Picture (cartoon, rainbow, N blue to C red):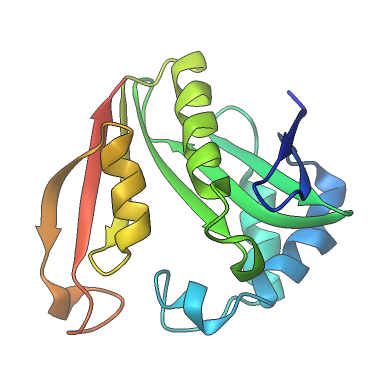
Length: 169
């Protein structure tokens, strides 16, 4: 599955399945996410323990992970989590230094391809309404907003409206 990719900046990226020995690289990526990236994800930083637990869940039966690596550092991760034989949720995180280089879009396409390969017919994701770039990518790829959640009940508090997007594959 390894795939080489050259970003518009000229940086070489390798997209591949996550490996068990990637834990330290994942911890480094997640713990160095800046405020700009975190503001779209959650109001607090990741911990090493949390990243370890996320990594331990990857089993390639229900939880899948694709990473983007540059110069021996993981710079992005895309996850697919199957809820049932035909439905799954996805998420993509791109490190601050690699945003706005089409890496996120490339990873969403990879996750959609992976979802199809493992029999997923319905793929959903969540996004804050202020994440204009991600919303643009999702809509461009065919995702539709299905539901808006009450901001007062979201992880982010009153200032962040969250939407669920879905696509039938």
